[in-house]
Length: 98
Image 1 (spheres, helix red, strand yellow):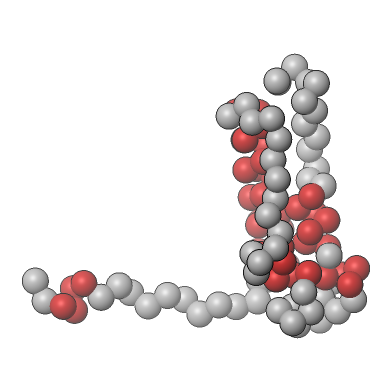
Image 2 (cartoon, rainbow, N blue to C red):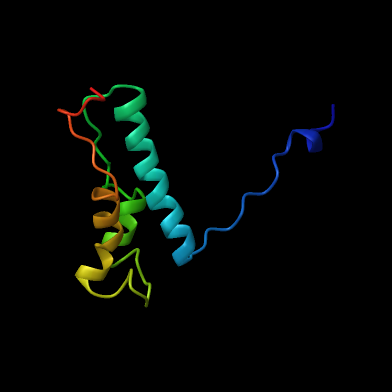
């Protein structure tokens, strides 16, 4: 076995997410939370938004240099955090799913 066959392929370079990609990630957060509560019967879900995780990268001005609706002002930089926190579905611990 040659050493070249053990070399992993290069990783893609990081890039600023497109607006469509942001929507996909927000949807993935919501889907994961919904699956945890409705399918796995978790009591609740907490989204980790600190220490350079994705949500934190949008909130902080030193990692968010966007010039669109997701960057600039504090309000704009908090958009992803708010979208992840308030998805378009509601699950109640008192619903018939618990």
